[in-house]
Every structure is written in C-alpha cells, then in structure tokens.
Image 1 (cartoon, one colour):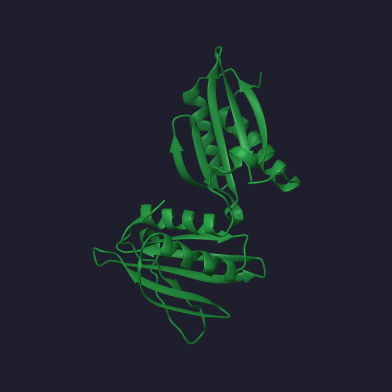
Image 2 (cartoon, rainbow, N blue to C red):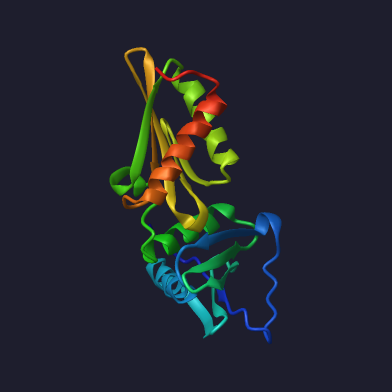
Length: 217
C-alpha cells in the first residue's frame, strides 16, 4: 500500500539525543520480533515505498532516525529502539495525531521486516476452529472482546473478520461465518506453523468461548 507524499521519521535513541514524540493520540507503538537493524531497514524501505520526501536520517547502535514531511507540511516520526538482539520497538507519530496513517506505516514496516501482512495467518499460520449455536453478531462481539482481553492490537475489522497483531507484531485473526443455523469460527495465529502459534490460536479460542458465554457444538 502506498502513502503518497507522507513522511516517516525513525529517531535515534543515543543518550546524547533528545526526541519528544509526545504521547496519547499522537503516537502508536509496537514491538517487533526482529532486531533493531531489521526494523530500521524496514522503516527506510517503507519510506521509499510511500514516496516520502526524506529530510534527514541518522543511525547508531542504539537506534535510528529518519525525518521527512508530508505534502501538507506535517511531520511523521518513528523511533526504533533495540530491546534484545532479536526484538525491538518502534514508535510512530504522525502530526497532528493521525492514528490511521501511523498504523498503516506500522503495517508497512512489519511487512518489509518479513512479518507478513496482518492477514497472513489466514494463509500460512496455525489455526483452531469451533462451531457455535450463536448468531454472527454475538460471535463478532465476542471476537472483538477476545482481542481486547489478550491485549492484541486490532489492525482492521471487516464483515466476518478481525485482523490484529499480537506481541512481537505476530499476525493473528478471527473469522466467522454462518452455516446452517450455526456460526463457524476460525482462530488463526502466525505466518507459519509452530508450537507457539498453535498455543496462541488455542488461547484465542478459549478466550472467545469465555467472552461469548456459549457452548461449543
């Protein structure tokens, strides 16, 4: 996806630099199960993908900074912070408080870092499935509450599906469809099959059933 004439900034976190990204409505923060170098490279690539006018960029052992400007004159900033050799954090600020664009930029960074699209789990991850004597509205509401309960960041909601990001930006999702008077619900985690992703799918299913207050059929 392209964000014409937008701007990304990745802030270096060296002790000698002070950067105020603001808080609350101005920022969107995510952790990634990738190194800071990988996320930095993904952020730079994302800026190029978006056709952004880069004003400056800095990088050192503690992070990286890329500054650019939207066509409207608003600045976008992203802070990349190493948390571990294989884990990092990125904070995106799009002034003034454009959360939609900030989340879209995060999605592009995740994709360029090899995390897959937030919907990738529907094609390659592990899954659990259940059939419930409840209507689609009840199941949709329970799926939403499940994401909130597990502290998963909802990326998009469409009719019959919720896509989200779990810890480390792992793609997760819930999909539901009405079949012969019942609702079939599928819980998907990860972009590939693994024991961790199977456990995540199982946890989503258990949390869903608790939130729905219904019995499996």
